[in-house]
Image 1 (spheres, helix red, strand yellow):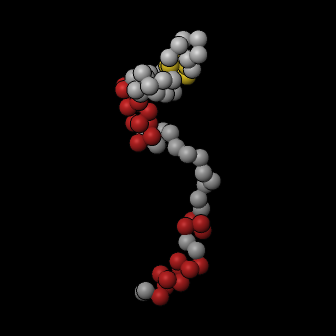
Image 2: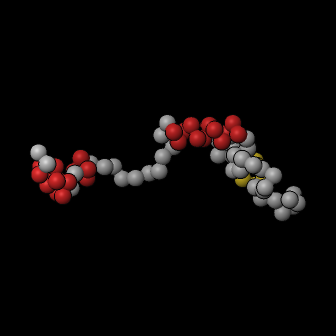
Image 3: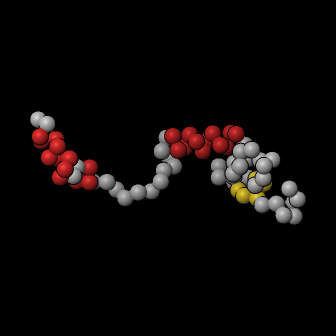
Length: 72
């Protein structure tokens, strides 16, 4: 890719500039190491998709309680 038209992004792990092209196999990461660090952060829930807090009431609907009571 021509350097004049190349698109660069920052590696999400180390912030190093990475060319966004077929020649960058780990894009958007700069290396396999940074890719694995990011994967580890997701696996340990250091990264997660934000959601509303779930209350105990949210976990049990009326239908769930009826089913539970009917089985015991």
